[in-house]
Image 1: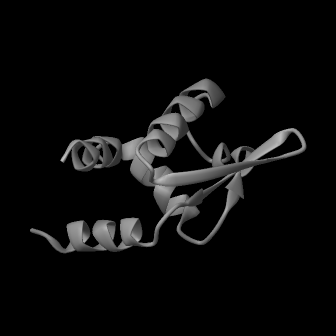
Image 2 (image 1 turned 90 degrees about the vertical axis):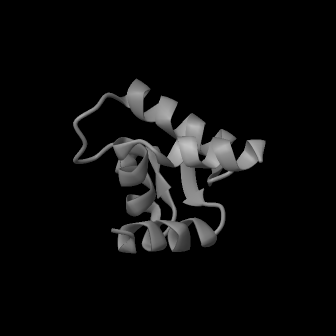
Length: 86
């Protein structure tokens, strides 16, 4: 149950939901995630860390960039279901 709480807490923030939606089409580097957003690089890093610690995102380093992707498509299914709730 502790993991479920961690996942729902991680998903319960508008910025983190925006990050997940950006990643729904596939892997992106931090440089792309930071485009068209109204928050700093350090703020983005904090949100990415929370999502990664909750097991929602995977990351990999390539050169000086870190690339993020959604760890499990079930996360997207969960968000789809949540959108359908009234």
